[in-house]
Length: 357
Image (tube, rainbow, N blue to C red; front, top):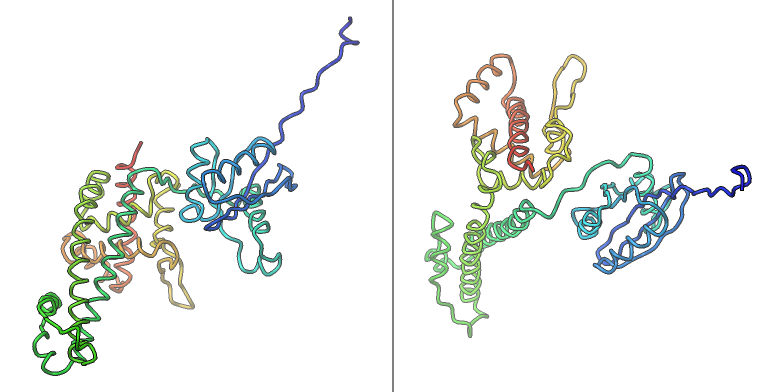
């Protein structure tokens, strides 16, 4: 048989696909597109381990997976993101469709999932999700519990103060004190009569003692969480904690904002944008000035604000800088903004050093 008459086998190239996932608490909806943007399938699965496997099998059955765009990778899509990464699939985070787009195209799970897939296909979505499998995720979980306990304690202390203010004069005289701690101690010593709960004075005693016990229990809870959080943060980020005016809780917030994989951020300028400390022009007419971004992670921005204000009070270099910029005509607010930007640069370098693989 000659070469000319031989039967030549043609191997068709594999179909390349991308996918987008609209995530919810109970279910996820996935839409698959080929490289030309044609829709090749969609499916709804449960937000569970079995659902994740079904979703991956469904997408892989449509072609060679390039990447998958997932909404809410830090909340509803966190489990799916971890599963896909462990399976070796590239995952990018996509934003929910803007209101204007929804007004034009409508709103449904398939529509949102297709929008996510098209963001991936066009290259609009490139953000790398946070890695939630390391010690920074443990810090985040502990911090969530501690922040909730602190918030509840603050609320309870405010309620004690308000109830004392409106309590009968005799009761008010026995529990009112100049400090919150003293008021709690006095309220813990109350001995109300539950059988006379219809009496406003006895009802106030019952309520005050209940709130005081709540504060006491919350203080114990906060102390236990601090005992776990403090050494963990010091072990994970010794360089960060060693910086001026960076305590355990500000360091924890900044670690959570950066994530276990800070290399997903292209530069310290990207970290500044993420923390809301990137300067933006705010000039008008003859006025020439800059302001900080009002976007980004506001909790991280607050942490940087605390660091900047603390350095102004205790750090000689920061005080000298403030004096020099004041002489140049900058306001205190603008000086703090500058210090926050410098702190963001320093902190990003420290985080990259501490979390380097």
